[in-house]
Amino acid sequence: MDLTLLVVLVIGLALLFDFTNGFHDTANAMATPIATGALKPRVAVGIAAILNLVGAFLSTEVARTISGGLIREGDGGVQITPVLILAGLIGAIVWNLLTWLLGLPSSSSHALFGGLIGAAIVGFGFGAIDGGVLVSKILIPAVLAPVTAMGISFLATKVAYALVRKGQRDGFKRGQIFTSSLVSLAHGTNDAQKTMGVITLTLIAAGFLDTDAHPPFWVIAACALAIAAGTYAGGWRIIKTLGKDLTSDIEPAQGFAAEASTTATILSSSYLGFALSTTQVASGSVIGTGLGRKGAKVKWGTAGKIAIGWLITIPAAGTLAALAALLAKVEPWGVWVDVVVALLVIGGIYLWSRRNRVSHRTFHQPQPGQFVKPKKKPKKAKKPKKPKKPKKSHKPQKPKHKNKNKKKG
Image (cartoon, rainbow, N blue to C red; front, side, top):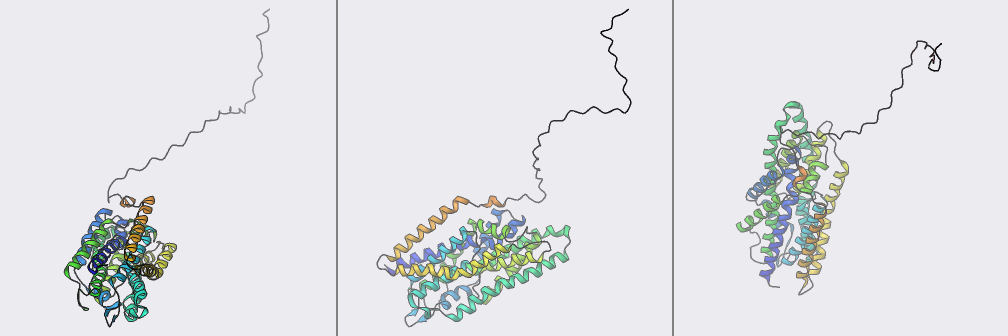
């Protein structure tokens, strides 16, 4: 296959992954303000899309972690080829869509890392992976970030409920607009960069860029637009899981605390170049705020499913990518078969999702102060009245004389 055509194909798949990343991770910022009624669903995803677009231009540290750190350089350059990157993207996209179908807030970032690792191992062996970068920049943050966010969210919730009286807590809804917007901005600074890193890695592997090159502006702009479009599409299934199914009814003070904790954790990691999962951070924050409010309950069954998803994402996406890489090695038609099979699987998942559709209408909530006419209870059928029994008299009754048949004298 012509190298330029292959690079164009890989870039197209990378932008498709970025789109799925957008709607898969919309819940990270907007699940709690939608759940509390602070924002209407469509308004929420619109704000998230715009701020993801802006955030993508603010930093490229995470992109450099992927393009110049995770995969080792060999004698002939970086130890991965455009064909292997294509296989890695297929593994990441398919796993993203499977978890979206299940409403499982797994990590798009870890799906991408798992896909690249699985494909690189098939192509060049385990030596192609820089273990130091994998542990320090990906695995350690994967453990520490959700725990840190959970702790911060727990304390923030306790402080909010201690300092603000019950009648004044609706003011947190206005604060949620600000904090959820910050989460969206922070998400753009972290997640959009991962696709930038993949495209830059592809251009380096194809020889179009130097090994230590920064992502070109057109790459940054394309990735920003793709993740913004995906965000606006709205991942309603995962929004439902984080906003309604993970803890009992979230109150505005809880949403405010969770979003503030998520923002602080993501921005700190972006500054340090840690490619963490914003989904894990957001989920940890929601659990922390559920533990922090007296009377709230964390649904540990749902939390357990999410944790299992976190554990298996890297190996699962890596396995799918490894299978795609093995098929891609079959010349001359392997790459095209990979692409066709991937498109059929993607189409099948989408059609299956239409059988049980979740949309923004699932989250309809009345405006604050809006009168909602209560539903009338159906009237119960009246039972037939029993005939009243004659009252017993305590007075002795006089005997009745029948004089009708007597003749007059």
